[in-house]
Amino acid sequence: MDRAFNQLVYEGRKRNRITSTFNKVGWNNIRAEFIKQSRYQYNLLQLKNNVNKLRRRYGSFKKLILQSSFGWENVNKTIVVNNPSIWDSHINACFKFRSF
Image (cartoon, rainbow, N blue to C red; front, side):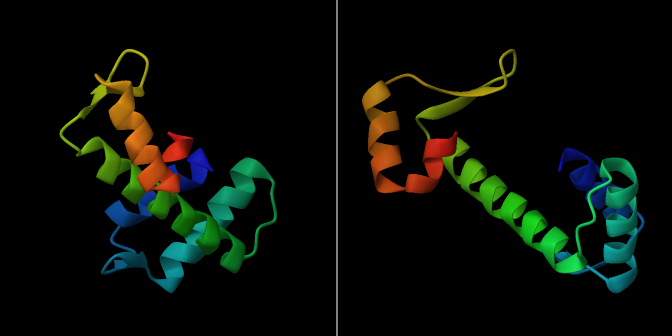
């Protein structure tokens, strides 16, 4: 999926996007490149669903990292928090944060 994400960035730079999503040409280019690199025969709907899942995960991650108690450690590429009880309270408040 990382390769597909890289292709999304590339298509975005080529301007094959309409607002926050890609146009038909962009999606077809992304699918063709994804199949070429991964050899998985995802149809367009499957690929779009996976991209949307990545977007939702990124949104949850961004929401979490912007909290005042949280930070980012560049060395280990992990979220850091000074007080473990804050982490527990955020996980209990939103189950989406458990994956981080």
